[in-house]
Image (cartoon, one colour):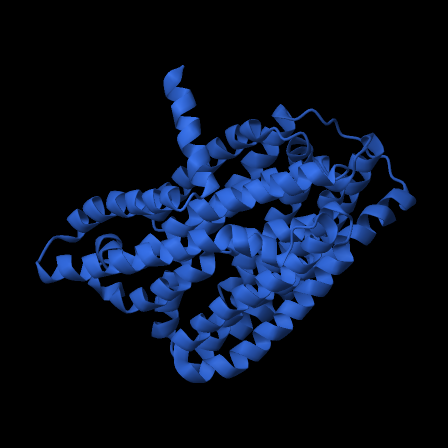
Length: 435
């Protein structure tokens, strides 16, 4: 998966992001990027095909050679559908995107389950991935408006590539550092500890990435559309930031407070050692979407060079934090991630302040009250969980009882402290009920 993620980052080379950023695009722009992505995908596949045995030797898993060579075919299908997807994103046709992706996901998932039940093992995952990519390609070409055009112009290619390759390098850095904790934990601790960390991290990432990636697809074209109107762009960015933190804060903090009954219900007591990891990791998820929105501002203004520069700076400070933190065990590494998230927020918001006058202090003053309310909510909920467990109340009843109570407490506190997003929600509900 690590090598596949690296390959996928190289296939696109950030050129589709260049298309979304452009105000005016024509058939030649799309054709140039389509040809470029297709060539890159074939080259990357050939490379991954040739190095597959070496990767298998590194992990001492012979089966990886065949798996990588088959799995890597997905690169080509991704390139074949990239332009159709980009056009729909640029046109902000997100309902159609969902209508295309949902059946592809469901069908490939069902096929994978059938193969798994028939003892195909890990190949079921490979089949699921390839089936999903093939179906997406077919659906995007059937429902998309763009028709195949093989025109090419070197000048246009260099224009898009010069913007995109920096994003591609940044994506490679992110892929490497997203997986560096797995390598360190396996190397210096144990495979068992790694399994607990992986379970906790995956559990934390699921709501964060689902929420973040959905909004990411919306925000980039929206910001690009408003780039000539700084007042409107700043207002949209501020409103989005407040609403995202308003929603993600109680989700992550309630998840942390309710971790024990949640894990017992979903996974059983064998996974209880993962609970402390999950509880701390949840705090890294609060700012996760905000990082990408701030970086989107750099892309909107065509500063992928700054984007890459900031990623290099942040990765250097992550290395420093890891060098200090791994001596304190896995929890030390996780607390280092919280520190890295906070410092990354300061770094990412610096240029947002330069471009749209909405920097670190403005963003902090808008989101900090909601985070503090969430922390108070989390502490109270954690105390209630401890009390309920001492009384022998079942895990499911704890969740049923405490989740609505926690959300109600959070919302009420936000209203009492005059958090504008909470009041906007009340006004929205009133307007709907009055119709």
